[in-house]
Length: 138
Ligand code: 5GP
Ligand code: ZN
Image (cartoon, rainbow, N blue to C red):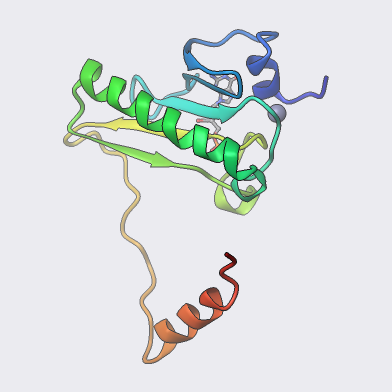
């Protein structure tokens, strides 16, 4: 067994407040929440970043994210919610086992993603669009 805390949670070798699980996915409360009820969803198998997860597993992952989101909405009645995943150290990933966050949000809770600092200059948007479109795979 590696040293990954989320792998340990997945096989119940480390404690967690588990919300829901399937054979391949597990969801549990974040130990240090942005708001109470902040929940994490992970594949039980260790993948560092989102793009490394096989399609069939990420399909199941998004279904569990949807199911848990609905439960958070019904139980905690937040005013909104964020779903996000940080991939790589420079994107703020601290635990190197891919996970999605669901964060219930409340009016004036003080948590901020904005403002976004950049804007495109003339033609730059098309340039970036071209760069990404060229690498889209079927
Ligand atoms: P990241 O910054 O990697 O996207 O987020 C990692 C998240 O995992 C953080 O929100 C942090 O509070 C949470 N976390 C770190 N260690 C543990 C742990 O041992 N148990 C649980 N439940 N959450 C953890
Ligand atoms: Zn892991």
